[in-house]
Length: 276
Image 1 (tube, one colour):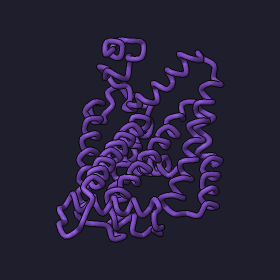
Image 2: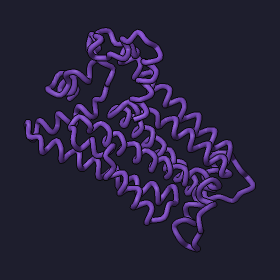
Image 3: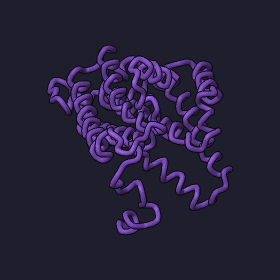
Image 4: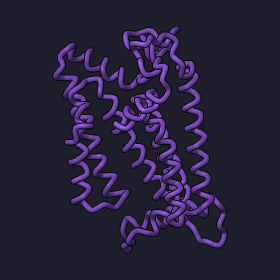
């Protein structure tokens, strides 16, 4: 099986680093999706566009879900946000240009990572997230609060609290699984488009928000340390894999801004590109 992965028809150019990098855009998940389309549909451009449309639609739906379930935006405005996201020309560009698939594919995995991280927060921190919810007797949210409280007691040994050990262990395992899933999804998003790796920082910022909302400092600190360590390892691995960020073969026609001799014009050009 591994021989097929490393030497088969899908291995060339993205499972092995090239001897000379012509660019530093390492997006193996996106490349593999193009190869999947080509293997099944050949050069039929309709298939490539359909794939982009599906990814774009899923990203818009996930945005509405995140807005309503995590940010507590009303259903109307959550749907409106999805509508704006799906119809804005900046985002629909990924449907017109096949190569733009990296954007909706990365966005989809980012939203999935945030949803998984939110689920982990609900299980592991009884104050910052669950306490703010309206608890219904015998309902699901009451169970989540009990599970989170048991998790805290098991993790930090709060002997003054009577806990259900089986529920605490189940919460600990579930929270750990959601943490692993979330960090894996962030890594996958970065392998679709480089900007996905910045979501490690977003998760750390979310921990700051939960802490500000009254979350347990020890739990927030532990989660922040794990996210920071894994994020640092992934980014260093990616930097080493692409042999840094300097491009060996970059002529002035490929990147005229970098070759420009006027520093001020270079700066405003970069601002314009990133400001778009």
